[in-house]
Length: 324
Image 1 (tube, helix red, strand yellow):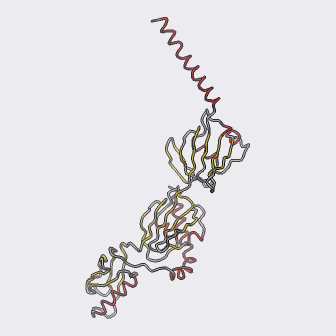
Image 2 (cartoon, rainbow, N blue to C red):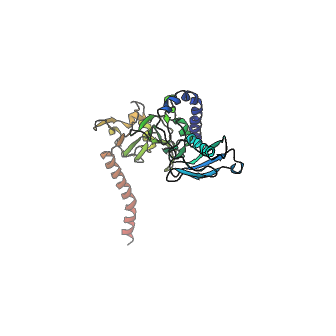
C-alpha cells in the first residue's frame, strides 16, 4: 500500500515538475495534431453567462447529425468542432438572433468519445481519462492512480492518427524526463504492459510462472508484488520454496530463449550457488529454471521409506500371527 502511494505521488510530482519544460515544446507538437472534434452521443454542459434564467447551464447530447438544440440559440451544428469552436458557433447563433449583442458561452465536456484517453493495463484505475488537449504521459498516468506492482518497463501508446503503436521505456522506479514528457493526445490508447515472467519447473517447492519483479508470499498466497528489480537465480529459487530433497543439485539448468528461436542451456550447481562459490546470475524474461530429479536420491528415499514402513508393519503382522 505504501509503495502504491509512493508511486502515485512520485508520478504526480514528476508531472508538475516537468510541466513547464513540456509546455515549451507542446505548441509545436499541437500544431501537427490532426484535429479531433465532437461526435454524436457526446454529452456537454453549456453555460450562458448573459442569460440569468439559464445560469445553471444546460446539459445536451449531440444528435446523430452533429447538432444540439439549445434555448434561445436554437439548433446549432457543432459536430466535428473543438470545444472553443463550438462555443463560438453558439455565440454567433445568439448574435444572429439578436438575443445578446456580445454573448459569452462556455462548454464543459461531460462525456466524449474523442476527448478521452483510454488507460489500460497494470494501473489501479484503468478506464477513460478526460483529455481536451495534448498532455504529457505522466499526467495521464497520474489520473489512473498507482501502478499495480506487476507493471513492466514498457508502455505502449496507440495513437488515433497512426497505424503504428509507440513503445516507451518507462520504469516506474526510475522515471526519465523523456519518458514522462511523451506526448499523449485525445483519442489515444495507453497500455501499461505487465512485467515479464520466468518459469520454475522440476524439483522445487512450488512449480509455476513467476513475475520477474518478485513477490512476498505468506503461506500459499502472494501478499505483495513488484519489490525486486533485478531478480537473481538464488532469489528465484527462494520464491519457489527452494529445492526438494530428491533434487539433482549439481544438474540444475537455466533454459534461456534466444532471438533466433534457439535456446541457450546454462548449467549450475545449487550447493555452490548457496555457498557463494559461483556468481548468482540475473534471471531474464522467459527463462525456464529446471531442477531435475536425482535417481540415486529417489532410490535412497524409496529404500528408506520401505524400511520405515516395514519396521512399522512388522510388529502388527507378528502380533496378528501370534494372536489370530
